[in-house]
Length: 130
Image 1 (cartoon, rainbow, N blue to C red):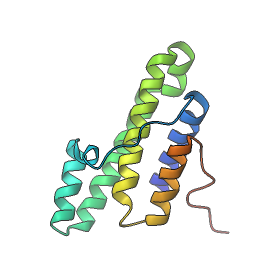
Image 2 (tube, rainbow, N blue to C red):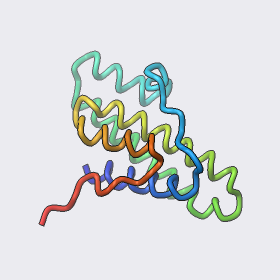
Image 3 (cartoon, helix red, strand yellow):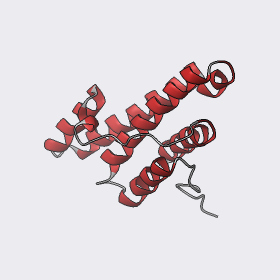
Image 4 (tube, rainbow, N blue to C red):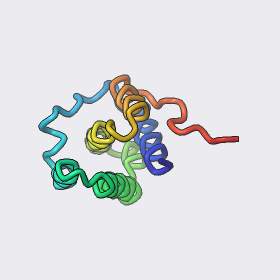
């Protein structure tokens, strides 16, 4: 859960600061247009829920790696247009992941999707326990 919360917070923080509006949410068909999305669909069709979650968490790690390597938070200072494209890509993929996670964590999924639609960073998705 920590990976999902941190990734969503990072992406939504950057996008809410640097994008003027929200993205168009992916359609049902868009969810499965990537290799990760197709693999999640195959796993779900076969009731291999553990594998589906593994693929989703791998997808999240890939987005984290992309942020670390391409540094859109720095790029926005020198090339706002290129950074905006990266933010849109990251938000779109986060929206796909959140939608595909809905059967497993519906409240969290809805919280992330609502934040994307509003283009704002939500309060902690997974608050720390005392």
